[in-house]
Amino acid sequence: MIPQYIPIEKISMLRVEHDWDDWDPYELLAEPDENTKNKLEMVSSRGITAFSLGCAEWTIYRLSNHFNDPVPHNYIEAFWVFLMGVDDALPPETENDDWEGNIRGPINMALMTTLNTIYLAGDGPPIQNGALSAQITYHVLGENSEFIEWQKEVLERFVKYCLRDEDNPHGDFVPREILDPSIALDELESKKSQFIQDFLNKVDYPDNPFLKHVKL
Image (tube, rainbow, N blue to C red):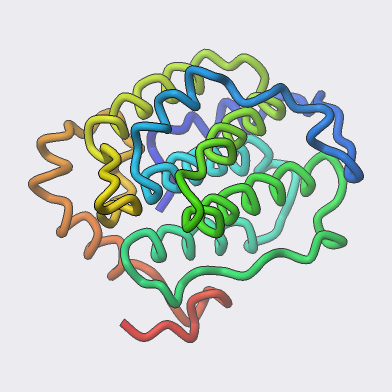
């Protein structure tokens, strides 16, 4: 289920030039962008998590030529299953000692920032963490025009499709296609149930350690 909207072959071949500090990675990251935060303030909590997850996908695929480990992709898959309404799919926190260095460190931070958007949603919209996810991608990818354009387009999509309602702050379940600018929002709405069910049907649950216990 490789996302077609991420130019994986191109960004994964880029040289790794970013610094990383396992003790305090926040020191190296720019503050979350105010415009991104303003957009996410209008988005449901599930929508914010989906945006964070989309950024995590960019981070993971950007670094994909530099690690050989299925776990990050297992996390991505489990997060999507969770966002599509399967609460038992929520994966656990990582063991930080296993995720150090300038490759595994940013991947870990991207995944756990997404997890934090879920944990913190009970206290209000997880705007800060949602916007932080984009900054992690910027840090490992640089000022990439394709990511910048994707981010701009999907933020507008989230505002229109996952508009926050304080009577239902978590919002409805989210299909992965929300992240694909080539799919019109009208089509996304009319085929939402189909998109979600198609994704859930394609998952190999026994093969993913975070999903092998899930009963649909």
